[in-house]
Image 1 (cartoon, rainbow, N blue to C red):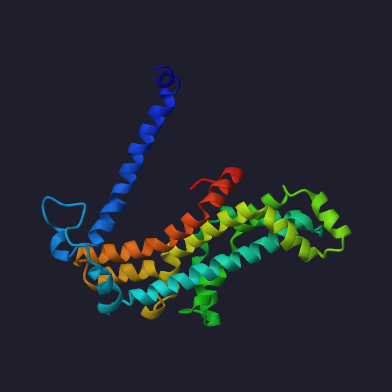
Image 2 (cartoon, rainbow, N blue to C red):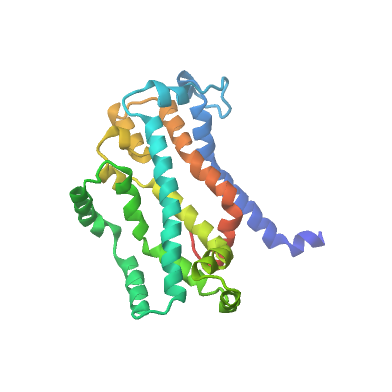
Length: 281
Protein backbone atom coordinates (compact mmCIF):
# COMPACT_ATOMS: atom_id res chain seq x y z
CA UNK A 1 0.00 0.00 0.00
CA UNK A 2 1.47 3.38 -1.02
CA UNK A 3 0.16 5.11 2.10
CA UNK A 4 1.85 2.55 4.36
CA UNK A 5 5.18 2.92 2.54
CA UNK A 6 5.08 6.71 2.79
CA UNK A 7 4.23 6.67 6.49
CA UNK A 8 6.11 3.55 7.58
CA UNK A 9 8.45 5.46 9.90
CA UNK A 10 5.57 7.26 11.59
CA UNK A 11 3.63 4.00 12.01
CA UNK A 12 6.62 2.21 13.57
CA UNK A 13 7.26 5.20 15.85
CA UNK A 14 3.63 5.34 17.01
CA UNK A 15 3.53 1.59 17.66
CA UNK A 16 6.77 1.77 19.65
CA UNK A 17 5.55 4.76 21.68
CA UNK A 18 2.23 3.02 22.34
CA UNK A 19 4.01 -0.07 23.67
CA UNK A 20 6.23 2.08 25.89
CA UNK A 21 3.18 4.00 27.15
CA UNK A 22 1.43 0.74 28.03
CA UNK A 23 4.47 -0.47 30.01
CA UNK A 24 4.63 2.91 31.75
CA UNK A 25 0.94 2.72 32.69
CA UNK A 26 0.98 -0.87 33.94
CA UNK A 27 2.31 -0.13 37.47
CA UNK A 28 -0.15 2.74 37.86
CA UNK A 29 -3.10 0.63 36.73
CA UNK A 30 -1.99 -2.19 39.03
CA UNK A 31 -1.79 0.20 41.99
CA UNK A 32 -5.30 1.50 41.29
CA UNK A 33 -6.63 -2.03 40.85
CA UNK A 34 -5.03 -3.30 44.06
CA UNK A 35 -6.22 -0.31 46.07
CA UNK A 36 -9.80 -1.28 45.17
CA UNK A 37 -9.44 -4.95 46.14
CA UNK A 38 -10.21 -6.43 49.55
CA UNK A 39 -6.90 -7.26 51.22
CA UNK A 40 -7.44 -11.07 51.11
CA UNK A 41 -7.68 -10.80 47.30
CA UNK A 42 -4.41 -8.88 46.95
CA UNK A 43 -2.13 -11.92 47.04
CA UNK A 44 -4.23 -14.34 45.01
CA UNK A 45 -2.50 -16.34 42.29
CA UNK A 46 -2.85 -15.86 39.43
CA UNK A 47 -3.28 -12.11 39.95
CA UNK A 48 -6.31 -10.42 38.45
CA UNK A 49 -6.25 -6.93 36.99
CA UNK A 50 -9.97 -6.35 37.43
CA UNK A 51 -11.10 -6.71 41.06
CA UNK A 52 -13.75 -9.36 41.60
CA UNK A 53 -15.26 -7.12 44.26
CA UNK A 54 -14.39 -3.41 44.06
CA UNK A 55 -14.41 -1.69 47.43
CA UNK A 56 -13.27 1.58 49.01
CA UNK A 57 -12.52 -0.15 52.31
CA UNK A 58 -8.77 0.41 51.96
CA UNK A 59 -9.28 4.15 51.54
CA UNK A 60 -11.60 4.26 54.54
CA UNK A 61 -9.09 2.37 56.67
CA UNK A 62 -6.22 4.64 55.67
CA UNK A 63 -8.00 7.94 56.11
CA UNK A 64 -10.39 7.32 58.99
CA UNK A 65 -9.64 4.11 60.91
CA UNK A 66 -5.87 3.75 61.32
CA UNK A 67 -4.82 6.43 63.82
CA UNK A 68 -1.08 5.79 63.94
CA UNK A 69 -0.41 8.49 61.36
CA UNK A 70 -3.17 10.99 60.44
CA UNK A 71 -3.12 10.59 56.66
CA UNK A 72 -6.15 12.82 56.15
CA UNK A 73 -4.41 15.60 58.07
CA UNK A 74 -1.24 15.11 56.02
CA UNK A 75 -3.35 15.32 52.86
CA UNK A 76 -4.80 18.61 54.06
CA UNK A 77 -1.34 19.93 54.98
CA UNK A 78 0.06 19.07 51.56
CA UNK A 79 -2.82 20.80 49.80
CA UNK A 80 -2.42 23.96 51.88
CA UNK A 81 1.35 24.08 51.42
CA UNK A 82 1.30 23.27 47.69
CA UNK A 83 -1.46 25.75 46.83
CA UNK A 84 -0.05 28.60 48.94
CA UNK A 85 3.49 27.99 47.71
CA UNK A 86 2.41 27.95 44.08
CA UNK A 87 0.38 31.14 44.38
CA UNK A 88 3.03 33.08 46.30
CA UNK A 89 5.87 31.92 44.04
CA UNK A 90 3.94 33.17 41.01
CA UNK A 91 3.30 36.55 42.65
CA UNK A 92 6.80 37.14 44.04
CA UNK A 93 8.70 35.74 41.06
CA UNK A 94 6.64 37.60 38.46
CA UNK A 95 7.18 40.92 40.24
CA UNK A 96 10.92 40.29 40.59
CA UNK A 97 11.19 39.15 36.98
CA UNK A 98 9.36 42.24 35.73
CA UNK A 99 11.70 44.50 37.68
CA UNK A 100 14.74 42.76 36.19
CA UNK A 101 13.29 42.77 32.67
CA UNK A 102 11.81 46.27 32.45
CA UNK A 103 13.06 48.56 35.20
CA UNK A 104 16.39 50.34 34.73
CA UNK A 105 18.25 50.62 38.02
CA UNK A 106 21.94 50.48 38.95
CA UNK A 107 23.26 46.95 39.32
CA UNK A 108 20.33 45.26 37.58
CA UNK A 109 22.53 42.95 35.53
CA UNK A 110 24.66 42.17 38.58
CA UNK A 111 21.57 41.20 40.57
CA UNK A 112 20.37 38.96 37.76
CA UNK A 113 23.82 37.37 37.45
CA UNK A 114 23.81 36.58 41.17
CA UNK A 115 20.34 35.03 40.88
CA UNK A 116 21.39 32.87 37.94
CA UNK A 117 24.64 31.89 39.69
CA UNK A 118 22.69 30.66 42.69
CA UNK A 119 21.23 27.94 40.46
CA UNK A 120 24.65 26.30 40.64
CA UNK A 121 24.45 25.90 44.42
CA UNK A 122 23.03 22.50 45.49
CA UNK A 123 20.00 22.81 47.73
CA UNK A 124 21.56 20.50 50.30
CA UNK A 125 24.17 23.15 51.12
CA UNK A 126 21.52 25.61 52.30
CA UNK A 127 19.49 23.14 54.38
CA UNK A 128 21.31 23.70 57.68
CA UNK A 129 21.59 27.53 57.48
CA UNK A 130 17.91 27.89 56.58
CA UNK A 131 16.90 25.43 59.30
CA UNK A 132 18.89 27.35 61.94
CA UNK A 133 17.32 30.63 60.84
CA UNK A 134 13.80 29.21 61.02
CA UNK A 135 14.59 27.73 64.43
CA UNK A 136 15.62 31.17 65.74
CA UNK A 137 12.42 32.66 64.38
CA UNK A 138 10.30 29.92 65.95
CA UNK A 139 8.84 28.85 62.62
CA UNK A 140 9.44 25.10 62.92
CA UNK A 141 6.30 22.93 62.80
CA UNK A 142 4.39 25.64 60.95
CA UNK A 143 3.27 26.21 57.39
CA UNK A 144 5.61 29.18 57.14
CA UNK A 145 8.62 26.88 57.40
CA UNK A 146 7.53 25.10 54.22
CA UNK A 147 6.16 28.03 52.22
CA UNK A 148 8.49 30.99 52.83
CA UNK A 149 11.83 29.33 51.87
CA UNK A 150 10.31 28.27 48.54
CA UNK A 151 9.71 31.90 47.57
CA UNK A 152 13.44 32.46 47.02
CA UNK A 153 13.66 30.14 44.03
CA UNK A 154 15.99 31.60 41.36
CA UNK A 155 14.67 29.35 38.60
CA UNK A 156 11.24 30.98 38.71
CA UNK A 157 12.69 34.49 38.36
CA UNK A 158 14.98 33.39 35.54
CA UNK A 159 12.19 31.67 33.60
CA UNK A 160 9.70 34.53 33.84
CA UNK A 161 12.30 37.21 33.07
CA UNK A 162 13.28 35.43 29.86
CA UNK A 163 9.65 35.28 28.79
CA UNK A 164 9.05 38.92 29.66
CA UNK A 165 11.97 39.98 27.47
CA UNK A 166 10.05 38.57 24.51
CA UNK A 167 7.06 40.85 25.17
CA UNK A 168 7.22 43.83 22.73
CA UNK A 169 7.95 47.10 24.50
CA UNK A 170 5.68 48.89 22.02
CA UNK A 171 2.63 47.43 23.77
CA UNK A 172 3.75 48.85 27.10
CA UNK A 173 4.65 52.21 25.57
CA UNK A 174 1.20 52.46 23.99
CA UNK A 175 -0.46 51.62 27.31
CA UNK A 176 1.70 54.18 29.11
CA UNK A 177 0.63 56.86 26.60
CA UNK A 178 -2.99 55.96 27.35
CA UNK A 179 -2.35 56.67 31.03
CA UNK A 180 -1.79 53.18 32.43
CA UNK A 181 0.37 52.92 35.51
CA UNK A 182 3.37 50.62 35.67
CA UNK A 183 1.49 48.10 37.81
CA UNK A 184 -1.56 48.10 35.53
CA UNK A 185 0.66 47.46 32.53
CA UNK A 186 2.17 44.58 34.44
CA UNK A 187 -1.05 42.74 35.28
CA UNK A 188 -3.17 43.66 32.22
CA UNK A 189 -0.60 43.34 29.43
CA UNK A 190 2.53 41.49 30.52
CA UNK A 191 1.00 38.71 32.64
CA UNK A 192 -1.58 37.59 30.02
CA UNK A 193 1.17 37.40 27.39
CA UNK A 194 3.34 35.11 29.51
CA UNK A 195 0.51 32.81 30.60
CA UNK A 196 2.23 29.67 29.21
CA UNK A 197 5.30 30.42 31.33
CA UNK A 198 3.20 31.10 34.41
CA UNK A 199 1.31 27.85 33.97
CA UNK A 200 4.49 25.86 33.44
CA UNK A 201 6.01 27.42 36.55
CA UNK A 202 2.83 26.73 38.52
CA UNK A 203 2.98 23.05 37.55
CA UNK A 204 6.64 22.67 38.46
CA UNK A 205 6.12 24.49 41.76
CA UNK A 206 3.00 22.53 42.70
CA UNK A 207 4.60 19.18 41.86
CA UNK A 208 7.81 20.09 43.66
CA UNK A 209 5.98 21.21 46.79
CA UNK A 210 3.58 18.25 46.78
CA UNK A 211 6.33 15.65 46.34
CA UNK A 212 8.95 17.25 48.59
CA UNK A 213 10.13 14.85 51.26
CA UNK A 214 13.47 16.03 52.66
CA UNK A 215 12.60 19.57 53.77
CA UNK A 216 9.27 18.72 55.47
CA UNK A 217 11.02 15.81 57.19
CA UNK A 218 13.55 18.26 58.66
CA UNK A 219 11.26 21.09 59.80
CA UNK A 220 8.13 19.13 60.77
CA UNK A 221 8.36 16.93 63.86
CA UNK A 222 4.71 16.97 64.96
CA UNK A 223 2.54 14.30 63.38
CA UNK A 224 -0.35 16.69 62.82
CA UNK A 225 1.90 18.95 60.70
CA UNK A 226 3.40 16.26 58.45
CA UNK A 227 2.93 16.51 54.71
CA UNK A 228 1.81 13.49 52.71
CA UNK A 229 5.22 12.08 51.62
CA UNK A 230 6.51 12.23 55.21
CA UNK A 231 3.28 10.79 56.59
CA UNK A 232 3.39 7.85 54.17
CA UNK A 233 6.92 7.04 55.31
CA UNK A 234 5.91 7.34 58.97
CA UNK A 235 2.86 5.20 58.19
CA UNK A 236 5.07 2.40 56.88
CA UNK A 237 7.57 2.71 59.72
CA UNK A 238 4.81 2.58 62.35
CA UNK A 239 3.89 -0.91 61.12
CA UNK A 240 7.55 -1.95 60.74
CA UNK A 241 6.96 -2.05 56.97
CA UNK A 242 4.66 -5.07 57.44
CA UNK A 243 1.46 -3.41 56.26
CA UNK A 244 -1.17 -4.69 53.86
CA UNK A 245 -0.41 -3.71 50.26
CA UNK A 246 -3.96 -2.49 49.73
CA UNK A 247 -3.61 0.14 52.46
CA UNK A 248 -0.37 1.68 51.25
CA UNK A 249 -1.46 1.59 47.61
CA UNK A 250 -4.73 3.29 48.52
CA UNK A 251 -2.77 6.05 50.24
CA UNK A 252 -0.41 6.30 47.26
CA UNK A 253 -3.24 6.51 44.74
CA UNK A 254 -4.90 9.24 46.80
CA UNK A 255 -1.58 11.10 46.92
CA UNK A 256 -1.31 11.17 43.12
CA UNK A 257 -4.80 12.54 42.46
CA UNK A 258 -4.23 16.31 42.98
CA UNK A 259 -1.11 16.49 40.74
CA UNK A 260 -2.85 14.41 38.09
CA UNK A 261 -5.96 16.62 38.12
CA UNK A 262 -3.79 19.75 38.11
CA UNK A 263 -1.90 18.48 35.08
CA UNK A 264 -5.03 17.46 33.16
CA UNK A 265 -6.64 20.86 33.67
CA UNK A 266 -3.63 22.88 32.52
CA UNK A 267 -1.94 20.44 30.13
CA UNK A 268 -2.52 22.67 27.08
CA UNK A 269 -0.63 25.55 28.66
CA UNK A 270 2.04 23.24 30.03
CA UNK A 271 2.88 21.75 26.63
CA UNK A 272 2.92 25.19 25.04
CA UNK A 273 5.09 26.63 27.79
CA UNK A 274 7.58 23.76 27.62
CA UNK A 275 7.76 24.04 23.83
CA UNK A 276 8.47 27.78 24.02
CA UNK A 277 11.01 27.58 26.82
CA UNK A 278 12.82 24.37 25.91
CA UNK A 279 12.30 22.91 29.40
CA UNK A 280 12.31 19.16 29.98
CA UNK A 281 10.60 17.05 32.63
